[in-house]
Image 1 (cartoon, rainbow, N blue to C red):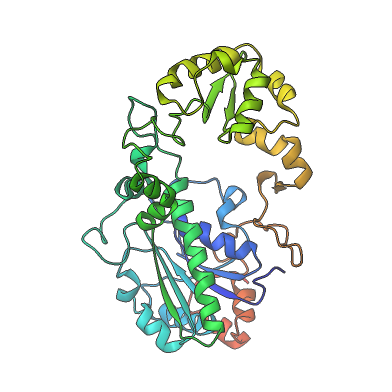
Image 2: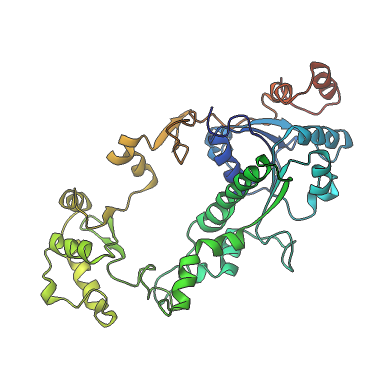
Length: 384
């Protein structure tokens, strides 16, 4: 069920961006079969408390293959022949050394979309170096613009490199390549690098920099908390409100709701007056609780919203009305997005245990009962 129903995706076990990109495809209805290692690696990223909370692992099935075993590699090649998409997140050259690189895979399946997720890319002097989200966005230039004036760069969780510039653009690349293939083109290799993806997310900043409208100084620009009317403010109860009235009419509404007289304040875009404006906003927001401000701004176009915690976000009336979050096996998580009104995505399924339903998945992927039994006898480790 979903817009990608009928698309087969073969995923090699990884962490972070590759599973997130695969989750997006799985949420849209793709049939995802994940090749897991027989045993969980001892040092592969942050530890999660099993499949129940492995949200980016949802909506797949799993088969376990020890790719150091030639028979397991042969089985992987048989799966590649049936796949529309292959997704891997190893260091460059890893699958080539196992005999599963793109040249071999595309020779077996010329219409395959072979998608590769790395931090630095498949080539370049850093290609084989280890790294994580923060390293990649540091090299992209993006991290330099995130943080307070006078302070150091602040990690924006791992959303810019791993998920926005990584897994999200990986999925975009896969979908574009699928369209290319379905229009009669040859299979594709997608080289998705988090460093380049993070830079892509910062495209508007590159434009502002070129036009002289961006200072290479944190906390001094329109969108980085430098402007007092695009920032967060503490409330009487220690919570925060976020404001962003960039347009003049929205800014005027903000001032009115705050009870501030425009005639007594500097002009909105007068940088020399920003400290005075900020001081006025700080004082005003400290006069009420977050709940009181939410009530005051209810129905307003002043571009004001409460800063909610993750748990609070699921309870907000707007998110409740849209059903933006769902509970699966007791774990609250975002629903699949975007929405397709004609072909809605199904309710998310729990992430699989290693090898769970592997036999059934292999059957669906064209393996005979005899072939599945042969693999079982060889100890390849999947469950029925």
